[in-house]
Image (cartoon, rainbow, N blue to C red; front, side, top):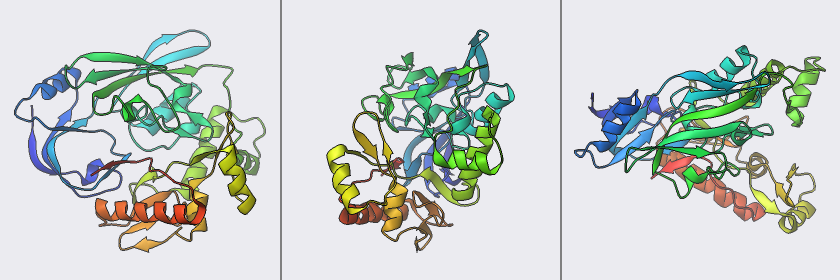
Length: 338
């Protein structure tokens, strides 16, 4: 097993934060993963995959295990649908593109989300009215303590809005190694309800969209307002959209009738965090190399040499300002490593 020392993690996290791993190993197989977990010489271990949903604020004094398990296989299919097993190290957007090439529907609204497949269930990734849980069948995860593979079905994952069991009671106890997704082969259910998708399709003169049309629309929208991590360090949406009760929403709406919102099923309302941040005058603001993106206030960016601590301080400043202005708490979507 090739264990390296004092390796920079700058290219392993999409924020491009330059912290060091005391020890580092690339994991390409399940047996290797089991053996790495058994290494008594390295009692502290830290898992990294796509590095897209984390903010590293310090050097990692542990064995950093880079999960690079690859492979996509069809495990079951009939004339209407297909179940696909995807290994944790596969890039999410490349998987979406592959599914569209096969004519499989279900992932098109989730185009261009940064990161790898193994981290997708942790925060139940979602965009434009679709969440991972809508297509998720199960995942296999290795228990850190025993090295045993355990299967979690959809229900066992306890999916919520940008949430799952892996963020709560199973946090740090399992390493997701593969995911099984159920996709449609025909009679695709199209989700075009989000205004921006409808507008994009309309602007392109598309009346009867295909799954590819929807993916193209999502990619165009995301590219128009979200920075590419290869060009500017970022982690996509840094904050969750807050969900408030009807009582709290009515109070908020009376003061801010112009505010956009999404009504949810259970008498709750989702308010766009980006709008709240923008109203506080923080959109496009820059503090050294840490900043709020100029086109999307939900996204915090590293313009070059910002430290994780500087990004974190900016995030806390935003949370305080939004609460002071609107009495609404916004929470980070990104996993902060302190």
